[in-house]
Amino acid sequence: MQTELKILKGQFSPLPLVCISLLFIVCISLPVLAADNQTRGASQPQKPPNGSKDREFVGQPFTQLPQLPEFPSYTGKWKFIRGIAYNDATGGPCYVMNFTVQDRDPQESRDWFKMALESCGWKVSATATSLNGISKGGNFLSLTVQPGRKGEDKSIVRVTYRFSRPS
Image (cartoon, rainbow, N blue to C red):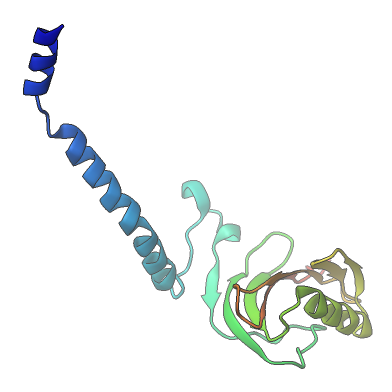
């Protein structure tokens, strides 16, 4: 038994130490690379998924909130973050947008959008933090409100707005 222990103690391999070091470096650098890719990807069009040539899935980023028919302008303090337009989507052009609003409580923001959309003639169904609506013109809207980061006095709003295709 003592002979076996001496042999094992004498056989030192640096391979496990190297593997652990590489794993540590990869784990530290992945979040940085992901954030860098998100920043760079904001100005470049997306590619269709899985090598598809279907233009329906190609999104074009935009940096300012577009004019959307029958969509109310938020009356409080807000900031546009980013958006992607899917102009060739089968059901009609579609915009996906993210922005922040000053209301800390997501419920307050959701309630404001529900009331404003209904006053613009939308038929709205709601849950605690989201809305779905159809306008008089047949456009579709899905809106989700989430709380901002801890300590921030704002909520994050994500809107998916799909234009109806003329029949």
